[in-house]
Length: 326
Length: 283
Image (cartoon, chains in turn orange, cyan):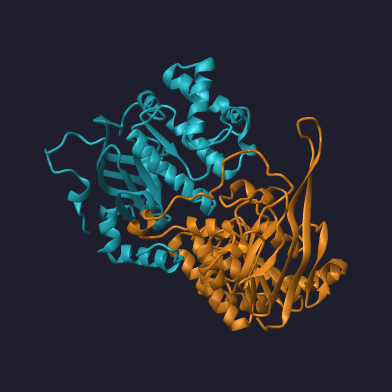
């Protein structure tokens, strides 16, 4: 973790105002609630949580695709919010993104050569057409696809191949940080490992830092050095991935781990009940106290009134009043 | 191709007709060089109270197979072979008969609940419509039955839910609503196409538990199609592996996971295990 600090989020908050309730009232929803993180060069940080946890909002806030209500995003110590449009565009070269649905993120009317040339037009305007094509061919080969595929359209590819093209498009700008929003969850299990291996290989080759957004803990364990667990926009627990998976202290992290599937029928069925699974209800939890309290089997009276602070317990940072009891 | 038929099919003439019996089912679509088979000579049988998992990757033909069981293969597809449900032939049956079967004796849940639910109608109306059509149940009695069914799939505040629109619900709640809708008429057979793939892991675990519980409680048979062998390991009794429109290997789930014979099955299983999380469950 001694890598030089590349990207930092300080106290990030994104609050959406919702209007038009039953009596025309408006309410506020904190999609991201005072979240801080750091990412060093060549490092991989996982942001994990269920839908609604704020993990995609975090990714978008880092890229300035949603406006922060509070907090700062710093790239090499420079606050992205005070940059002009032109300066921001230059920095965007360093921050590239790959998306969950490879087909939705590739223009169906463009050939692969054009798709890969787009970032070069923006970031390397000096290149001519032939040079762009040459770079596109080399990049395609770099993600394990044949350069002969340059003249095909996205629909001619499988899901796994399309995701490789999405990765090639992000890498062709030679970024230092790759934001990956659920990059393998739309793919068949058999293809996931291949795409994760490609990301690991590119990371090693280029010293690339990855901000890896996922609900799938298996992919996280495969790829990520550190893991940050979000629930309703707040950090529940964070720390080194191996340690978090071996000895999670937050009941929410443990619920996520308990829910992971095991490809072995005998072991899968020997598992115990899942007390901390989500209750399927419409009601919102109270703004006071721990956000996880309505689902927590270990709750105490104070959990409903006092929001637990993030604190160090046994090498992890945990936001749970009872974190040191186990 | 190796088929351990005896593990799925009951001994010949030793038992009566199974709930579902598929024989030599093929589906062809017109292609540039003549008809292309997306399902190619599939045979299987499923008894009441059993869960059969069909494992296959994208393009293996597993979804087309499910659609054929409901007589829902799109117009260009040509279906041959036999699908017998409770002894009744589905292939070539008239639409009027198929409409009576669907949602009544056989029901289906899809990967994406938003495509199966009507976004413009309240949940209550969508559920009671099924009861009016199949059971001539209307008004307060239909609403009562719909409320019961929502509660039985683990949804809190079911009466309140009847007044909501699909977009007001979370993904997991919509999936439960769709399962509740499929179960309203207590079908003999539930067809599930990647029912948990779009869900969070915690919700996925709950929905799979729910399927197992419904099988136990109602004696329903479930045919579950998925690319994820972890899903099959969790709930299925039997498994059939599909590749290129054919069933290439099948058997009892414990036996097949312990000793897969086909290289393709071994590859799928190895891929699933490489991504597995070592959780605190004894081996």
